[in-house]
Image 1 (tube, rainbow, N blue to C red):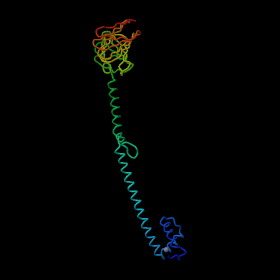
Image 2: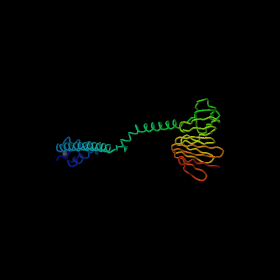
Image 3: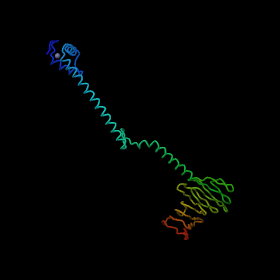
Image 4: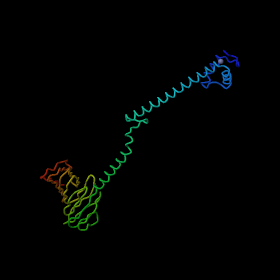
Length: 252
Ligand SMILES: [Zn+2]
């Protein structure tokens, strides 16, 4: 026991060593401790042992930290494997890079296809044919759009193609109401339809689901006939199916 250096006992020195290693010792006590250690072998031995112990604790703490890091990484991989990474996003989320452009492309393709198929035109077959106020040359074709008329003069005939497939008889006028769905208005004359379409007239609406239909409107008399189509007539008195081979006549 050498407690002679600046009145610092070995007991106090031991206490100060602990504080010193914990970096909790002030400058003056540190100087006193150093002075004591320089003179006291026992306390120096205690100090060395304490340093060694502190270092090994630090190492094990580092090891713990590494273990924790490893565990965390493992955890993250586990989450990834389970479909979740650290940010809570699925790896499938990465698929959006491929999926979104593909969906966009599909959408654009659909729209373009619809626009293309939604087109229709009027082909002059015989006689005088007008689209709007324009007279078609023999065998000429003119685009149709909603609001456009296709009209045949007496003795003329025309063919509608595209979104609406129909033959216009002599002295017939149709107005394109819509291309998708295909809808026309028959002002007067004869119209032979093939494929789904809706024909509105002053006396009622003819709906052709499939097959063929012939719709005529002359002097206030509407006739609807079909060979094999699914045709329905909707008039002021209600709806009726038009059976194949059994034409329907409606008068004003
Ligand atoms: Zn001592």
